[in-house]
Image 1 (cartoon, rainbow, N blue to C red):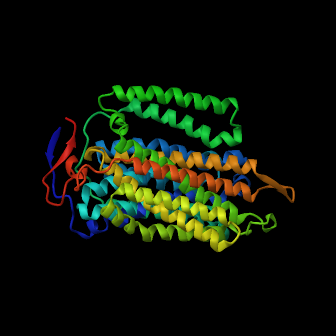
Image 2: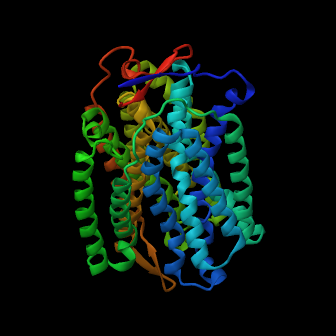
Image 3: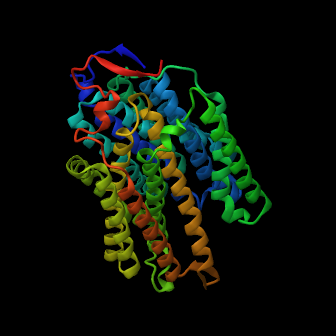
Length: 492
């Protein structure tokens, strides 16, 4: 192990005081970029002169790029500087948005959306920066807020995009996100200082390529299985390819002296169980937003739908983002008082309770909003606890890469949820005016699925080992305080 001198970890100027809100703004931007294209999907085949299948890649490309780049950029941040990689991720996001604003060619749009996927690394990089820079008494609330920005941005992005699309040219939406991205990039360049904590060594290019190929095969099969057919040769081949590539990658990582992902550390209960809980929480979180948006837009003639417009649907989801914003400091205080694993268990249980409400009544708008709010409350507690659990279980020099893997697990959970919900709703439909519409029992089954997964996440949280000391292991892995003059640099 090698120790190197560093300067004080907490700045005192106005830029330092703005670090937390600026990083949170970057996290919100990331989630907004992922959701703004949703209101456009029904009209984009006409607007771009392409097929619905090609248009669906505007979502798939962002998902795949984000999943691949999150752990890769997290590791790069640990090695070469978190601020540097954060600015690169925000820059790629902004460039991608600008390219979307300049073209109507579906091929360029897909490539630009893939560039926007780099923003998925903003949250784990920001969490790692907060751990390095803030004093211990401020870290918990800041990390909770940062983790909650995923839900906040998702709730804000849909109504924002719907309003712009309804009252302006669709390119205006991407011009607006380009301006916001440029603002976020400028603010981050001004306020965020480079973390002195590094993990020196050689970047594992082979490991990065292996992980990229394996994840692309896996997520492509999951995201396109419903469209191509789950038993089709391409889907089965992708699943088989993912299994083989990831198995080889796993063996290569175990044998590497400087792996992209420290699998020995990640396989321990204190890291593995939070990763499992992240996958399950991502599934349960996404079911709430995905199913709610479809249910309230269902035609009134279905007997349960409210026939709301996309703008009204976005406004229905907006309270969920506000809930996550308001409750993130509360979840941090619960973690401080009782431990992050208790917060995670409470959050998962609350998510399950929210789905019970959704199953009980999915016809009245106020009950729909109540159930969605309870699920969002649970999501806030769960998402705020996950990075805290990771930070307390990994060495200081691996925080960005470890949190990148945790965010990746959430992404995989959301992808699996999207495929599972689609499969359930496709099998439970009725014909209404010549159009296949999901039935209410189909939606209730999707809610039951989300609630069941949340309960499994609660069980995983309970099984996470408690901290070995009252001060927590943060003190034992070299976490720098405001006056500490040395920091753990990594393996020599």
